[in-house]
Image (tube, rainbow over all chains, first blue to last red; front, side):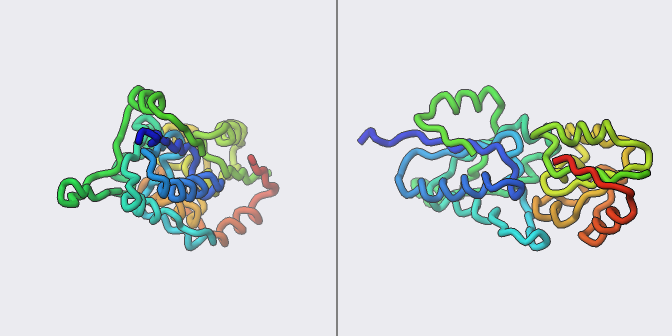
Length: 135
Length: 98
């Protein structure tokens, strides 16, 4: 079976200000059912989607950030964060949620899902995809 | 004649904060709301735009985005919706940089 395609979801918008971030997450979760080789990229303002401690009680919107931690259960465990975008915005990896997945081939060892990548590495990742979804 | 300048877009996704901050006059007040709150992060590249300005950010929008108050530039006021109203009434006009 070689019909598995490399799907990448490219997220470049901040959460809450527009609906893009939430829509992307919905599509990722739906797409996860199709057993493709899925990865997520967070660049530009998209890196804000992953900040920890989001609390939307004061703005009357649903806080969808806890959903990112469910991605590992859907075998979505390649989450690439553009290092340059993060640094430019005054954020570090510590400001982001700690997302993990369990590797069933290694006795369900917990592994990090987020990988910080340089712009050049991101370019290579984009280049190797079969399908790119942009949000 | 003091003006309240509202910015609701990220400084990294458009030029609203850049334009607002360079057009502001002495005595004017800047209020960052929605995605605009990212502009007040101390170690962010856009922080330099706010130098010497009276800046407030809307607390509920900050909390929604998971940005802790200790990550903000010194001197930035964090206000609630009531504080927003106070700023509107305390200034002569409002310019919203949509």
